Amino acid sequence: MISIENVSQSYDAEVVVDNVSAQIGPGLTSIIGPNGAGKSTLLGLIARLQPLQSGRVSVGGLDVSSTPSKQLARTLAILRQENQVSLRLRVRDLVTFGRFPHTGGHPTSEDRAHVEAALERLDLTSLADRYLDQLSGGQRQRAFIAMVLAQDTDYVLLDEPLNNLDMKHSVAMMQLMRTLVDEDGKTVVVVMHDINFASSYSDSLLALKRGALVAHGSPEQIMDTDVLESVYDMRIPIHEVDGTRLGLYFGSPQGARIS
Image 1 (cartoon, rainbow, N blue to C red):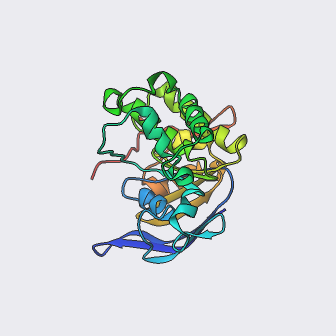
Image 2 (image 1 turned 60 degrees about the vertical axis):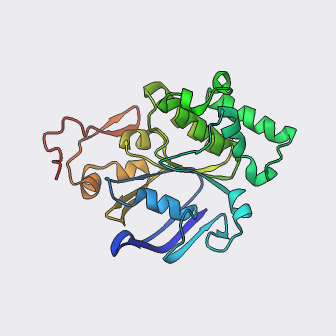
């Protein structure tokens, strides 16, 4: 369980996360909302990428603010929206970094097995000895996600994991997230822009707008024209296809304007 209690965060007097409280249970939760809603900031606060200014976050019963870094890194792993490495690394070396909380830089045969399994899951085995700068954007994205999976934590946080992925690999990524939940028993929280991917694969949706929590519930509850209008300021017709509620936001006669 991830518990978020009265969390607020501001930058230069601008409120980015506004008194958010939520309980995120087991399963796959997608954080949705427009640009600037505070999605990435909230995810980063859960992972202690920056100190909390107010409120409290606990993950698996651990207070994020006070738990030792090594213990926290064995509990949760996070993929940031933008990932930069200053060294020229091969894919396998990058993924091996995911084992650092367990090994301290001295991987064992068990650690190497985790690395190889993560490479296989992300369809990177054939690219394992290539340098990151020799990969496409989508391949690099999968390499960073493999590093997160190699960390083998109970909680996995992914900020826009579908960045740079084509349709095939986007579907494969969402299916992998379901596998992490359904077969591996992990709790997965993702920041998503595509509400239809979120609806199709998530157990719950958490919607933010201007830093505030607007709605939190099942896809059936959130994928509603009135609810989505309160989040995105546009009317989104909803259609049900094979039991999944999908929003046809493209081509909407009342689409949003850029302002």
